[in-house]
Amino acid sequence: MKRRVPLSSRPFPADEQLPAPPRPAGRVLDARLHLLDRQVHDVDETPVVVVDDLEVRGTDGDEHPTGAQEAVVTALLSGPVLGTRVFGGRPPATRWHRIAWSDVTEVGVVVRLGVRGDALDVTWTERWVRDHVVGRIPGGRHDPG
Amino acid sequence: MKRLFAVALGILTAIGGFLDIGDLVTNAVVGSRFGLSLAWVVVVGVVGICLFAQMSGRVAAVSGRATFEIIRERLGPRAAGANLAASFAVNLLTLTAEVGGIALALQLASSVEPRLWIPVAAFAVWLVIWRTKFSVMENVTGLVGLTLVVFAVAVFLLGPDWGELAQQALRPAAPASEGPAVYWYYAIALFGAAMTPYEVFFFSSGAREERWTRRDLAQSRANVLVGFPLGGILSVAIAACAAIVFLPRGVEVSSLSQIVLPVALAGGKLALALVIVGIVAATFGAALETALSSGYTLAQYLGWPWGKFRRPARAARFHLTMIVALLVAVAVLMTSVDPIAVTEFSVVFSAVALPLTYLPILVVANDPEYMGDAVNGRVTNALALVYLVVILAASLAAIPLMIATGAGS
Image 1: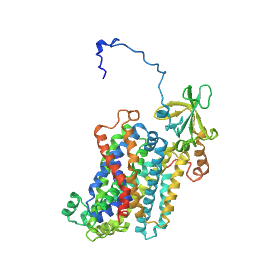
Image 2: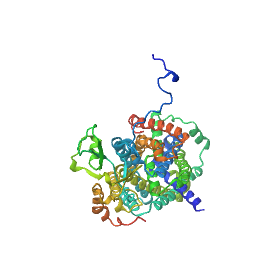
Image 3: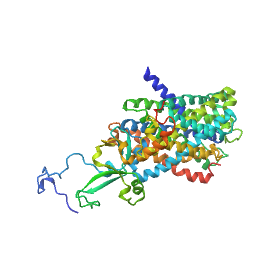
Image 4: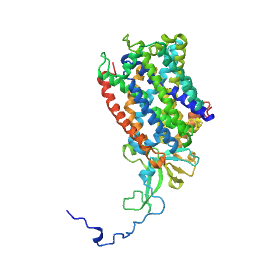
């Protein structure tokens, strides 16, 4: 077993300041922890979707970046990708409902968008149900009480 | 003065809202077979629901996140999806039992076949969800449900042998006629009835509906810590009524008319009328809560807009979910299945599903990112951990005991 070297006899000063690894400016986000499965709110605080998956692209435009490449999140995904996240697989890109990353204004306890949820493709089921079922039942378009 | 009124109103609603068809049926069945020897389970259940309802209310008020949003965030889509499937199914079963309960209570009042009442009851539930304000809905059913206090009055009017009741309650053991497996099976059923998970979904989502903030925390704590124990006393009173009237005669409660019989014996027609009104209000209130919970859980998992504070067209899928849930409940009941039997199954499956709901709440209530300085204290955490063990044990034992005892028969 190696004996512990006392502080005083070490080959470097005990209070030496080592250079810290470079930190990117701003807050560090963990895609899994801070983005996946977070609730998304639109500019009016209305819930839009939950982030079911993320679209990641290489900075050089590569659609399937490897771990060695630099990559950025380009969109939040929702809809059918939930099924493939639960059961595995990968839906064709034509079935993705994307929310462009440029629409995101804040990542906190919820992910906030700077646009209205009504204008997004992901909320088409909500609009369909509203226009074909719920909105047609008497009283459906009035405030309760 | 206004504040005091709000607190009093909240407490009264909590008492009236505590009881549902699960509590009514399970307590009466247990009372008729085991006397008060399972009253300790109600105490354990009430402390547990106080602990976790208060915690989920605090999480919702401080972080603005309802329970199922948190479950999804913390457990990921797969585990949360399995949790959703189980919770939604149990909730649907409870909703079916509650709607059946309304129909049975209306049958007692009118002698009209319950299958004629079932669609009427479900339609009325939907109409209230569709058009009434959240606070009005909560307060009216809660306050009218208070008439169930006649169960407590009936205990006194029946003039029981207090010594014997106390002995049953203080020296809990299975009566000679019942085996220990059945005793524990009903202990779990009673625990599930007191701690039904929908109450937590409803409580946390309700906190968002009423836009609670930190300032409302003291009031919510008072509602829970005073209202629920008083509701628990009513539960024990129901068991006591059944114990006084049915236990000595060896009659087993299997219908709603038997549940109200002790009250009728003690107080005559007026008491009977009151208790029927109370049961209609309690089951109606619980049907509203379970129907809303079915919408809350699904909408929160998938991130849809939800809430009664939005007009239905602004939370379309949320409202469609509740309509479908009510239609399924009606369809199940129309097969002439006995609502009492549905209730007995629903409380046991509630016990099975309990850990799925309570563990994520406990985890998030300790997360400073959500809670800031309002995280759980040490005492709350210690108590919650003890309860987690109890809940887990009840959940694991429920199905084996159900098979071993033939569902308590």
